[in-house]
Image 1 (tube, rainbow, N blue to C red):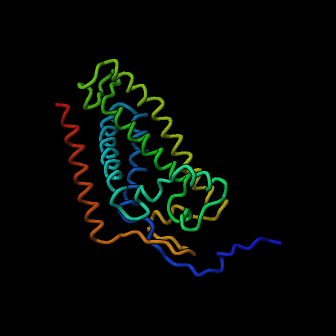
Image 2: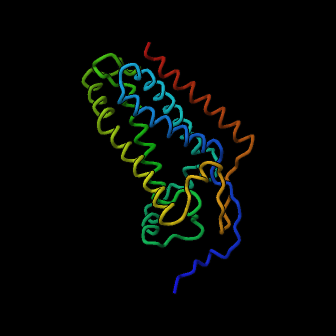
Amino acid sequence: MTAVDPLASLPLSTVRVWDLPTRIFHWLLAVCVCASIASAWIGGNAMVWHFRLGYVVFTLLAFRLLWGIVGGHWSRFATFAYPPATTLRYLRGGGRPEEHHEVGHNPIGAFSVFGLLALLAAQVATGLFADDEISNTGPLIRFVTGETSLALTRWHKGYGQWLIIAMVVLHIAAILYYLLAKRRDLVRPMLHGDKQLTVAAPAARDNAATRLLAALLVGLCAGGVAWVVSLAG
């Protein structure tokens, strides 16, 4: 006999999971990272855009750090910073209903998010001190020795870049797996923000006040990045 999902007959409710600032961050970051990698591969005059895109990614990462503290419920780091015991229980198929792994980021998804953010932060940081020994240098190169700059450049152009590409490929593969194997569309909720759920779950705040706060934080982060870049002298 075919197994029947006991939740299938429960009524669906619409819950706002991803607030607008989180969704804009997600798609802007995806576009900027892909364009940044492409511009680096093209080289030449495209490097001007590589730097600009890097500054945008810097701004986005700074914003996400703040939004992970004050943003919508499911965007806050505290919501998906799972302890090791919870992760192990999830891997063994023993997730608890109150943990709502099917709503926001599950432990594996959380690991992917934190890993990608950390890699991007390292990529931005190394890029600020990089030197391609042709015509392009990071804005903070004068603060490190030539040897240090070359070491950071090797990471930026080598391991760092390929680790990010690998994470992006794994991210896309996970989306396809959930879509094809589990019949769960992870893309659509990141477009309109809502999920159809059969369980009671808190909704993320997503109103004019939170969006204004996000805009103010983006402005603050952009100003901070501009200040860092201005240190080039």
